[in-house]
Image 1 (cartoon, helix red, strand yellow):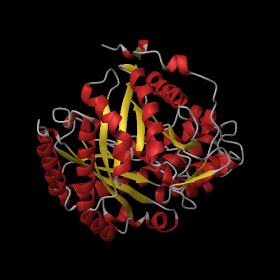
Image 2: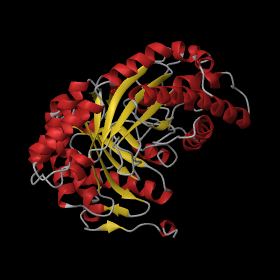
Image 3: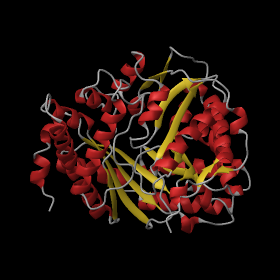
Image 4: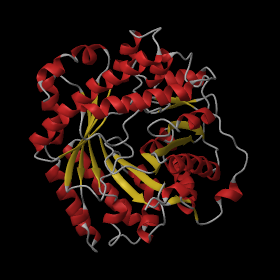
Length: 454
């Protein structure tokens, strides 16, 4: 049983260590909104979202008051729009019309973000998939709350290099169209390998086709709590270190489980999963980088970083799985640059590079996340970076992702400002040696041999 006494023991974590429920995300299936008439599709989508999500924000605020737990974001994830709009949309502009409808609905119900402007193209692209992908730059320019994600690879299917090449162009075009805001549109665009169907975190959230009509997923985060706990384990051996992380992750996840169950009851929507990711913010003391430093690194990026991150990620998962029967999403440690002051400090100190971040993504929860790069980086170079990250996910049977932001008009040594939870980021140097011939080959990279498990 989960009861109030368990929440009471987390008061210290909430008040002084930045423990929060990062998001309550309502997943909504839009499969019943499919039509050959675009206006009808938009009307059905708007009606369904505003009906099912009308009480989401109020419910989150009520639970926050009831238990004294900060609930930072209330969000919506949707069936990948390439599937929903495929029958009606004949041009990229048609998909932009759906994007504007989603944005209008998100504003109407008061959520922070709405995700699912997405396509799943790990093996090939339909006409609708391609049209949606081509529409992304304009859609992100003309909306405020829309988040977009494209799954271009999987362990089972390999990597769709045609989609990777297209997404390099899309990222660059999105940067150009939103350059007046330091290319902020790219902060709402993620390219995935092995994307999970139940991730509550933006910008990558979408409502998988295997999910129910509606579902409640909760993302809980407490890097400050883990760091504080590890301060008491200074000088101890690895067994004590691991046990401390595991026990702390257990307590954090129990908070998420409680909130998820309560939200499910109040909204009369089934409970899906708790995502126990350690998701940092720019706030002081809310940093995954500081956990790595507490483990014993001068800065993230120093020798030993990948091993320390692997240890952290594994113990978080072990503790979380014991605390909830339904752990899902990404669940582990996020290593974004702009959202983590400790990561920013490591970049500025010259310790953390793009190449070291790529190595760290072999053992973290996501990938190259919220990384600002020079605005003159070529689209093919961006595609090459994406391909590298997708290969890590494919071979290692894990989720990886890229959220790269080529900041138009800025270069290495300058800073991109995003504001809020997205923080700011130093522009990181990129290896500009050419990969054009490789990226411009057509087709896909086949699935690895260990994917054949039938």
